[in-house]
Length: 262
Ligand SMILES: C[S@@+](CC[C@H](N)C(=O)[O-])C[C@H]1O[C@@H](n2cnc3c(N)ncnc32)[C@H](O)[C@@H]1O
Image 1 (spheres, rainbow, N blue to C red):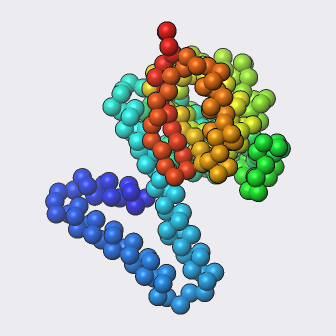
Image 2 (image 1 turned 45 degrees about the vertical axis):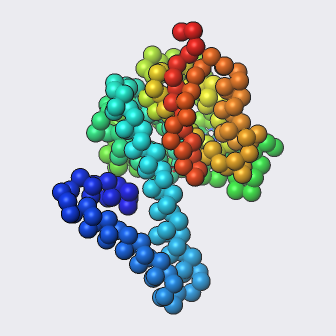
Image 3 (image 1 turned 90 degrees about the vertical axis):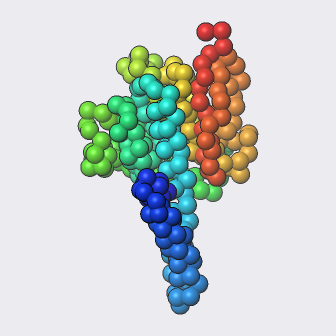
């Protein structure tokens, strides 16, 4: 949010951007002063810090990713097709995607999720925070949240099911020949990411961006999570060429360049 306001402020005539920037910086200092000086209890301080500093930091890092994709796809236009999202839960990333893509591109928004929360956690994905059925949002609830947010119903496709079953040839043929412009992978686990990558392979086109939201989960261990799934995918299909794109403290993304010898 802060980043968006700062970007908007930059468009104003001088000296307004400088004045507004000074106000933003002052507000940030003020938040820290409030935290230090007001006699909150420790629990209240924690709540305040989580809402006003910690979550805002995560939010603006994610927002940078979506704005960077918008910029990339705009400069390299036309990049047409789908916005695919694997792992949709509360709809934060789907809403952010729509906020930043709707004005430039006529993409369709496809939400792939079990809408039952996480699957059974396999040995390789065991970590304290992951539990079966955690992060569940009901399919109808998700749809109405997205429509309420403004995504036109005819531009929204929901694919319900656990990926090892739902991402089959029938679905692929239904969605093809249209390709993907941007793919957001936020399903946390190695075992969930493997079928996702196998599925998206046929939707890649020159310039498709793939974002791994959970790149640094599992202590950023390359033998775990989304990192491992992508490493194995690249080993399995060595002719597919990728270039690194934007990364944040949590996520990493790549641009698909094309296939060697094609
Ligand atoms: C961290 S949440 C996604 C958060 C979401 N992007 C947001 O902004 O609110 C992870 C999601 O991945 C889904 N998920 C994980 N593994 C899955 C699988 N194998 N099949 C289907 N859905 C899966 C869960 O149901 C959950 O909704």
